[in-house]
Amino acid sequence: MEKTELDVLVIGDTAIDGFYEVDKIPKLNNASEVSGFRQFYGGMGANTAVVARALGLRTGLVSVIGTDAEDYRMYMQNLGIKLFLKGIFGDTTKSIFFKEPDGELISFFYKGVTEKLSDLDPEKDLEITKDVIKDVGCVYMARTYLNLQKKIASMSRGKFLVYNPGYGVFKFEEVPETFYRILKNTTVLVLNHHELNHLKKAGFDQRASLGPKVLIITKGSKGASIYTKETEINVPACKAEAVDASGAGDAFNAGFIAARLRNYELYDSVRIGNATASFIVEKWGCQTNLPTWDAVLKRSESIQQ
Image (cartoon, rainbow, N blue to C red):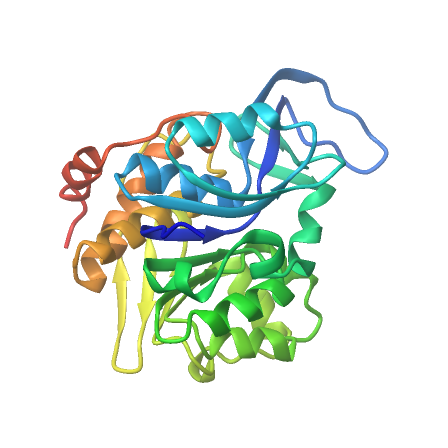
């Protein structure tokens, strides 16, 4: 295969997001009127890849896509993202969000073909070899496609590997052994505070996370916390007029990775991640208010040290 040099290789889902504005999220067996509807491109993996590309990184995306999303594939290809996509007959993952005017949100997910990502072989199905990974600056894995991620993590031993399992952890009643095996090769583990609390209930101990040198907990408008063996540091959020918080975590990851690859210190990289996320929340959709690297740097300077 032709040599492919990438700054970041993203492994994760591709989805179509539907946003419904409602006056009030109804109680069980009640109803509420929909005042507005919007549809956007989404998915934890694709969101991060698109934002990373906007920040100037040479970006690849490993994912699956259904027969209903050829326009999405062309969109990402036209952005200059190197695609390692497995086309599967069926529907692309759908994310459905219902949001109140005050920001309260409830969401539903139709798995579609993306769940098959976990069962694919990196080399045979996706053309991801050790030679491809060798030339990558950062490997980023989203969600909990554990079988595939275990193989990718093993192939990425010694690389800068960032893992954000996201809401996939909520299917854990107990923390799987495969999850711990992935963490052994992980450099940075990123969770939000809801995901961390759920993992703790499932038996996860962040002090003995068995691998990651760095644990980052994102906390929305309260910023983020960095945990290493030596220290704990809190990083303030970047002030923004939030319209839609979905996709903020994905943008954070893209900004953080871009900063680390450009040799910024850990604290400053998280600060830049927070600034990147602040652009995404200002408009509806996870890929609609894409910032440039210069814009992110300028806004990050407003975050108090």
